[in-house]
Length: 261
Image: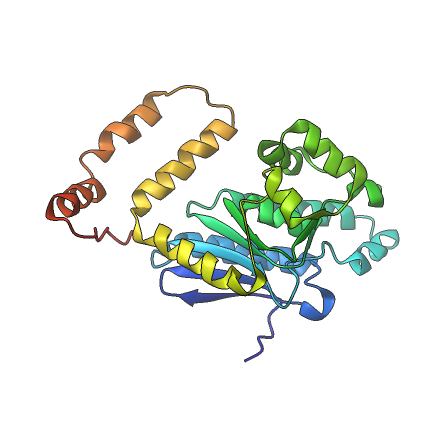
């Protein structure tokens, strides 16, 4: 059944899927969509029944970037740029800092802000129809430090400059070869590959997954060695419920059943 909301969420067991839903506009992103994405990401972070979050686009496109029709209003709305900057920053930071594992499931165009959303996810799985571009150079814009750093963290500074200088389109194979995405599959396989992977992650310890994500983010934020906080995380895990269940399952030669929270 068609859904009327431009951004909505579907749940399938422990996996929640955020859907960008303007297929007639190739899921072009409006200010209201960014606000809704932010709210949904926060809601899913609090939902203890959700273990993995997938982000995707309705139809044959992930997201073709910002809704340029909104940008046309900038002549009469001088604060539009400030509003767009605020809502995109908030939504992307909220998604990037989500405590739970996140996967972007990508078909077709993944451009501009759409690519920014994908980069905020932990992993990016695409089919062979996917194409990627980030186009500030074609619009006379400058990407923020936060946006640019996430791109540099994935592909390195030289490739990030190439992508931003040229605004050129990368196909799925090139995007995969430079580390912009993590897996490429045939179009008919994408849904199953993503869901199977998400369920595998969801079946493992969420305490471990969230701890791994937290530590990785600390490294991306500049940490180069352990401190008291990270050492305590490591030590305390040995007395945690997840470790006890993991050891018991290993010794009993059964699959572990980890706590929900």
